[in-house]
Image (cartoon, rainbow, N blue to C red; front, side):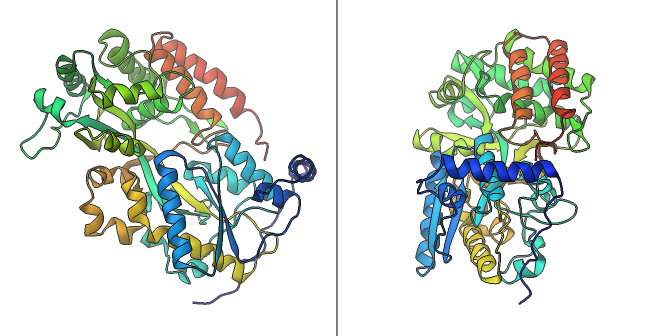
Length: 452
């Protein structure tokens, strides 16, 4: 199916952004002169081979290894097309680099972005709309993706991102320890431990086996994301929300937030079922060494425990507070930053690369991520991939961070939320004090105009 290339996106008329563009283009070119990376080449106006796909991502560790395999898969399938892939440190620095390059009119062809950053990137005029007729030329259509991820990524009803996965918060469990604790069913799966009492009792039974802890998850700074993910999972199960109106209004429900925070404090400070002070690596190590029978984390840590050759399973985080099931998650997406001289050939080059990544969803799913590409997600090949497919239902129950210029994965929003929540788990703040601190710090950002 053919159609005209995308028209140039209208540039926002904000004088602040125009000033920012001019300032960044000049400063960036000066500061990065001589660099061989696309950042330097772009801001210095050095043209790269127009037949090469420039691709930016933020994947390290096991994800980084698998992404390199997928990039090699693209090169092998497309020997006549160059691919220049650059990996940056994820978080705010990555999004700053992506914004700088786009504002400097030399962005990559394709970039990875978290779905929770989508609204901010689109409002800043940084992304191309992905029109149905262009996607169709490459065999892609909205109904071929997980609908929770696809719908959550729309901005004003328009698509700007192709989701490649959902990466939810999950529950890892040591099969041998849980077997000794009487928590394994006859089919080898973990028994149902939904509910506040059932979950705490399960941790207590496991603690009696390990002699140390029932479960672990990271609490200490600088990892503020883990406390936020645990809190948001349970808070969303109560129907709670934190921000509204694109982050300009705080709607935190004190009663619901207080109930969740009190429960988290009970698990750590009062019953000592989880450590009240532990960093990310320590939390992973306690579980890997059998000093805890459960571990709460993102599914991406599957590679760590496979490498440790330990007997583990993975499942949904229990529905601790009842109601409709909900779990904190985000999605990796592929986006096309705005190009000044976009034409059909360049657009198809980019979309062809995107489709190649979807066609390699098996490699990506082996790293724990729930595939968003339904032709693979509905296949027997994925359903037979365990324990990865055991928590696939999380994709339909994903709760994404609320929109806001300061929100999304790796954002100031998560830093504020996670710092206060972690302080409650550590016994340093009461739930009431944490709620007051959250309100105070978020209010500053909610009352600040978006800088882009």
